[in-house]
Length: 400
Image 1 (cartoon, rainbow, N blue to C red):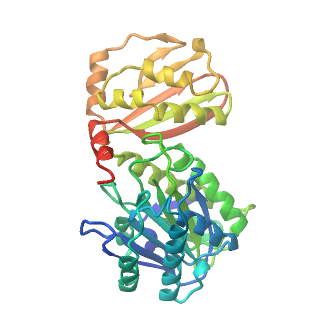
Image 2: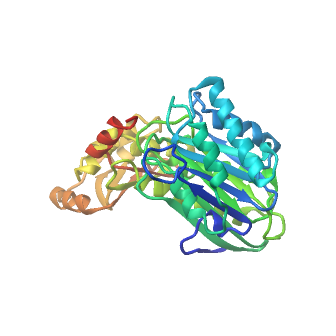
Image 3: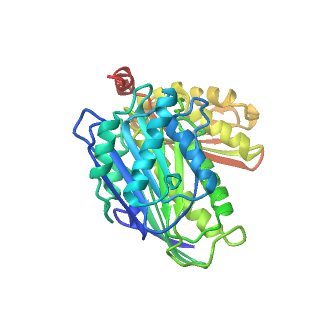
C-alpha cells in the first residue's frame, strides 16, 4: 500500500462529501457551534460509542439509526452535550435529525446526531432550528466543521490521505475534537471519518473497531470518560474500486489505522493545559492485552503526567504505575527508558546524568517512554499529555 497525505486535508477532501457550519448561538462566544456533514451519495455507515453507562440522547438516537447500517448525514453541535435530560433530550436530538433530514431531502433515520459541551444543560432549540436552516453546504467546508465541534480544544484536528491499493485508489478523511474528559474506551471525544472506498459493511464495522482499539482506546488525558463519545465512519463507494472486504482489506485497515492514530495523537497534544505529548511504548509483555494495560496505566498516571510537566526524571513513578497495571512483570527482567535514556536495567537503576535528563525533558514537547518487560511478544503504544496548573484552571471554570 502507498498513501500520501493530502495537504490541508479534511473530511470533504473525500469526493461526494460536503459540509457547512454556523454560529447558531449555542455558545455565548461568537464561534461556530453547529454543523452538518452530508454525502451526495448513499453510504454504508458504522459507529463506535462510549462505554459510559450515562449515555447522551444523541448517542442513544444514533445507535438506533445505525442499526440499519447506513447514513448520509451527521449533524453536530458544541456548547451543550444534551445529556442527562431525560425525554426532553431525546425529543431535541430527534428534532435535530428531522430538521437535517428535511434540509437535505433524506430520511431522518439516515441522520446521525452528535453533541458536545456541558452536561445537564438543555439545547436552545430555537437557535438550533434557525442555525440548521442557515447552514450552507459546500465542498470546502470541512475546516468549518472541525471548528464547530470544538469546546476546550485550542485547535482543530483534521487529516485526509489518498491511498493506492491493489483494489484501486481511494481517499479517507477525518475530523475529531477532544481536549479533556478523555480516557481509553473512548473518551469528550467526537470523530467523523469519511471515505469514497467501496467497502463491505461487515468488514467496515470490524475495521473501525480495530482502528479505534489501536488509536482512541490508547489515549488518555485525565482518566475521565463522557456520555457523548462517538466515532462515525461513512463510506459512499464513489471510488468505484473492487469492493473491500475480509479477503482483501489489509490496505484499507492500515490506512484507517493511520488516520485514527494521527487524530488520537492530535487530541493528546491538545489536552487541556497540555505542554507535552507523552508517548508510552511497552514491549515484551506476556501478550498484547497486558501490553495495552501497562501502556494505558502509565500514560494516565497523574504522578507520571505531573513529573513530565515539571521535567522531573522520576522514573520510579513509571515503574509504580506499571506495577499496578495488572500486567505481569518480573523486576529482574525490567528495562525502562525515558527520553531514550536507560534509567533502569534488569530491575536496577542505571548511572545517568539526572540534571542533563531533567534539562532535556524540560525542553521537549514530546516525551518518549519505553518499557521492556522481556517476558513475551506483546506490544502496545499509548498517548497522553502532561498535567499542568492550566488543566486545573480550565476545569474549575468549565460550567461557567
